[in-house]
Length: 355
Length: 125
Image 1 (cartoon, rainbow over the protein chains, first blue to last red):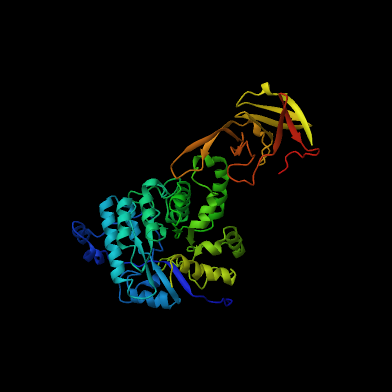
Image 2: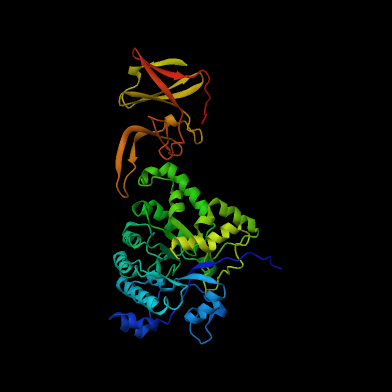
């Protein structure tokens, strides 16, 4: 028998709307339009097989089509079903960052952003949008942020953690500069790690199975976060906020301790950092909850949350309609009410400036 | 207060150092730009003999991707874990709360004196 936990308003920061590739055709210019019409978008997949599939099985719309592709069904199942006040629509197009042609990748992102604005964001007051940019050409990405970042329902810029190099490095800076200029957080989401032109999906190389690939996604986030701090992103762009989406949470204390310890010895190599590295993380970064770690002893997770001031840096996410969906009614039940309210609602409301 | 005159000035050339023992404590005396600085030969981190570490300048707080090298001769780096300390203040360069123990130096008639309280504890922080 489950104990009753007080329910709160919910903001879900990772909801995957999907679309048929052909839905982007009206928003594409030539030569890209003919390409997609003839052979689809052509993402570079990670290549890893899961018997479960990516989608939770009850999320296929009754009228058919891909899970997450019918706004009305999403409203019924997620928005109304869980009393979600706002859902940040994150799409799947960030996967384009693992493909090879920077111009094509940028064109797909632009088409998707227009599609998102025209065909989703006006459908329900709960829908807010993560515009997507491709990381292959950061200057094109910055231009796209300036083009659509001012839309009132666009609340962040999404990039993929599947990239060609650590995301703090200097050639990516135009993305962060543009995001800061437009007052938008940058969110990083797992993509097609190991596929196409992205790096190997783990630090050790290519594992054999999806279970290994999925577990090691946290490594990508660790590497990107260390890079972003040490490369001085948060010194150079002091108003920038970064959201680490779906990369795990439990690794953060160890990373902060290790990075701080190394800073004491190696400060002279990053003289632009004026504070402990962990302090920049605390002041600039948020992590989404899903897939939340589930230790045998729930108290262990709460202990760990206490180490990282979790109630001020976590944002609830469901990952709907993907297989590893976290129900807001069933996770983090052991937290104090105030911490739950911040994680499930207040932190996102403040970060995304939602009224 | 007791002043222990331990060396004559000509014993330490500019940029040089000497380690002396006073009442069982090892103390490093550094000559930096004509001034003397004395520190306990004991790193507050894990007790390394800090005076065995190199003295140099370092990169000063700067803008991203710019490097301003300065404080030449004013920074001692622990020989074990590489922590940097400002010889003038004893403070580490990453936190003013972490510091190597400093002693006041008095020079009198060509002799270098270390000023010590009557009771000093080794390795205190």
